[in-house]
Structure formats: C-alpha cells, structure tokens
Length: 289
Image 1 (tube, rainbow, N blue to C red):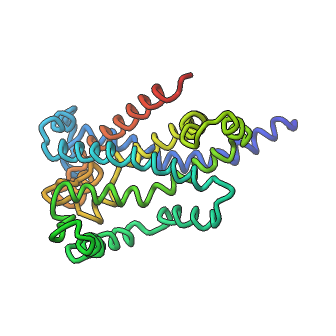
Image 2 (cartoon, one colour):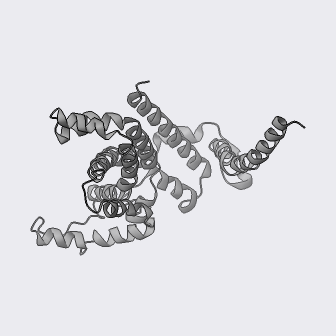
Image 3 (cartoon, one colour):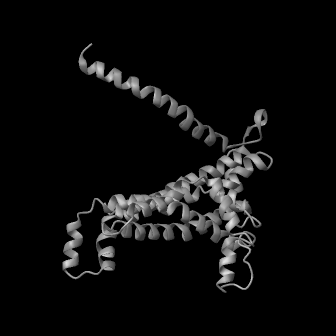
C-alpha cells in the first residue's frame, strides 16, 4: 500500500464515524419529520394524508397569530440589537478607553446567563410591584404600575427588551473582531481629511463590516423565527396568545395539547422554508457579488 492510499484510508477512518453520527442524530430526524408532516394520527394509527397538514395551516388562526408575533419580534428587535451592538463595538474598540476589558465582559456576560434564571429575574423586575415600575413611579413618569406581562403590547416589548439584553453582547463580539482587522491608518487618514466621528462610522466602519453585519443579521433572523425560551419562560405565550411564538406553538401541539406530531412537523418545515427564504433575500441584498 503506497503512502497516498494509506493517507486516504486514515482520513476516511476519521471522517466516517462522525458522518454516521451526524446522519443518525441530525439528517435522519429531519427526513423522518418530513415524512411525518404528511401523516396524521399516532403510533400504529398513523396514516398518510398527503398535504392535509399543510392545507390546515391556512385556516389555523393560532398559527397565523404565532407567525405574526414572531415577525413583530423580528422587525422590532433585530434592527435595534444590530445597531446597538455596532455602536457599543465602535465605542469599546477605542484604545484610549479605560477598563475596556471590563466593559466588554460585562456586555457579553448575559449570553452566558442561564435562560431560565434571567427569565425569572426579568419577571420579577417587570412585575406590578417590581423594580422597573418602582423606578418609573419614583421618577413620576407613570402614575400607576404598568402590567407588563398582562397586556399584549407591553408583554411583547418585555420580550424584545429581554432578547436585546441577552444577545447584543454576542453580536458585539463579532463586530469587535471585525473592527480590529481594519487598518487604523484608514481612520487616521479620514480624520486628517476632517471627517467627523459619525462620518467615519458611517463611511468607513459600516461598509468594511458589511459581511459581518450580514452574518449577524442572518443568525439573528434565524434565532428570532425559532424563538422559544423567552416566550415560554417570560410570558408562556400570554396574555391570550399575544406573545406566542411558532416554536412554542409546535411545543404545545406536541406535548401540551392532544399530540399532533404530523401537524407540528408541517409547521416546523414551513419555518425552515421561511428561514431559508429570508436568508437568501438578505444574501442577495447584502452581498453585491
């Protein structure tokens, strides 16, 4: 056996076990779920019903509500988080700023916080007698406590605030890495030419970070469309399903209501298609190549 053939055999020896595991635990469940989306019933009573589950989506008011909720989060939270992360990254990239390491760690730290823990803290802070209402009343900004979790739009705003608090630092790290790869002489030349800090940010930072902005936008869109933890732990989809996400609706169909796994699988594949379409649109808009 020659050296080239031996290297190929050793390489396949490393690749094949991982490939088998990925297929068993990743691709097989996807294929099985796709087949399941064309079936109804449970266990031995499962039967093929064609596009019945997909047709049902068009008359399911709860699915439409959950989908509209997710798009509300997407429109409100993703741009806010991206802009805030860009501004923070630009500030914390300044070498003259003291305690940069501390501020970077403090802003990134929410990403490492347990989802359940921070949901409990947020519920406590935004309760009727919680910290937020107390502060607002002491500042005379409101005359009576706001029922954040009990009203549709305030509950949605609470989820947007929670998502922004948790994931802004995550995106900021990407932008910091990108900023540190930009040659400082570009900024120095612009400064000599009389460009203001805002002009440098708009004309230099944003264009040079465009690929990373595109990446974080696609990841944030993907995560928002599959949102589950915040709606489950903060509001449990309430009040009156006003904050219900699609992933939480899939969870309810599978484990809380009478199990309808076929219909839940059909909804999951619709979300998969939406994620793919939105990612493709963002790539076409953001990537001029």
